[in-house]
Structures are given as C-alpha cells and as structure tokens.
Length: 287
Image (tube, rainbow, N blue to C red; front, side, top):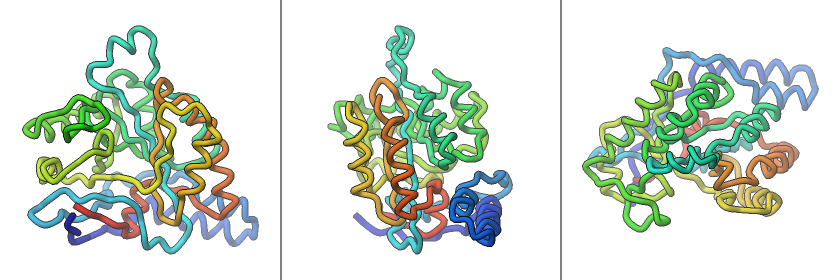
C-alpha cells in the first residue's frame, strides 16, 4: 500500500466549543465534571467543513485507521448499521436490523459515536436515521447503499461492479437526505471492510475518506457480551477506532457489552470522541 500525502483540517468551531467547556469543567476540580464536559455534545457549525485526509497518489481515496500519534487517551466507537439491499422481505417478516436500546444506552452514558449507515437501513428506519443524524452527540457516515462488497470473496456478501461503486456511495447520501439526516459526514466504510486499489480508484473524486479500524469488537453474531467487552478492552490504545454493530439480528449483545466497555475505559482515563475528531488530530492513512 502507498502512503498518501496527508492534509488534515483543523478542528471545527464545534470541537473548539467542546474543548472550552472541558477547560471550564477542569477548573472546578471535579474529575467527573471534567470528563462529562469533555464528552458533552456541542452544537454543530454547519459552515465548517469536516476534516478529511488528502487523496493519495494518482488521486486514490485515502484510508484512515486510527490516530497512531494521539497525544491523549481518545477512542472512537463506531457502529455499522448494516442492511443489504435485498433484505427488505426479512425486515417485513419481523427481523430487526436496528438497535434502539444500543442508541439509548449511548445517549444515557453520554458517549459520542460515529454511525456508519447503509442507505437501505436509512430507508427502512427513517425516523431512527433522522434522530441519530440530528443528535449532536453522533455523526452519520456512509456504509454504502446496498451493503454489497466492493471486492470479491468478502464474507459471502454479494458484490457491486466497479462501474457502480461510486453510484452506490452517492445513492446512500441521497437516502440520508430523504430520511432527513443533515450534514452526513464525508466518511465511507467499505462493507465488510473489504477494499482494494480498484475500489479506492472507483471512489476517487467523491471527496470521501475511507474509514477502517484498529480494534475489532467481535460482536457480529456473538452471544457473550463479556467476551465482546474483553476483546475491545484488550485492544484499545490512544487514538483507536473500534468497530461494532448497530443491528439487533446480527449483533444482539452489543448494547450489554457497551455498558461494560464505557465505564471500564473511562476508569482507565479514556475520553470518547467521534471519528472526525481523530481525523482532525492527524491520524494514519493508507491507500
């Protein structure tokens, strides 16, 4: 893989406001208040442009994995809201691809997070998509429209042809707008995390930064929330990106695992941030 030149934008006005609030809390001498202020959601600044990585050589889409040079204990929890384009019948039959208890837990625990949403999921659950997208604690990012793989042999997923890859990403953004999601972020997660040079080339010019991870939560089809929590806690480092899921049918233990993960990481001194803040801090990128 080739390292792209990196050009990371500075924190937005919203992040600056959050930092100011954290500083005020620090003056109180109350560690709990300090931590809460650092993670308090701030009003978004619509005029500011979200931070992204610069394209790689030949304009290849850049790939962000973590902030390997993080100066403090920050960690980004990310959740994939998966639903493939052909699963409508299963949803109609009662299968739940959403997870309201997980979102409620994140809100109750006051945890910022980035939700990588498929366009098909937003169409199936528009009210939830809109609620997440309008909550300043969260940011919505793109997980494709169809959740079809962008490479062959990707966990058995159907594949999207190279000439339809860009259209699939753009169609997801259209679905977000139609659901009422404002300001979806220019971040894209490949279905299954599978990509190659051809896929990166296909998305060149879209302006997205592809977002991977360095900690696999292991919640997909897991039945033991404690095992998921242990896997996350064993893997997290300053600047980590954790991948988890926001689908009850495929990841039924995630909400319970989060209730263990969050207090344990806070006890270790970690602060939860969204992916945009890690990218703004100058994370690693490869393409």
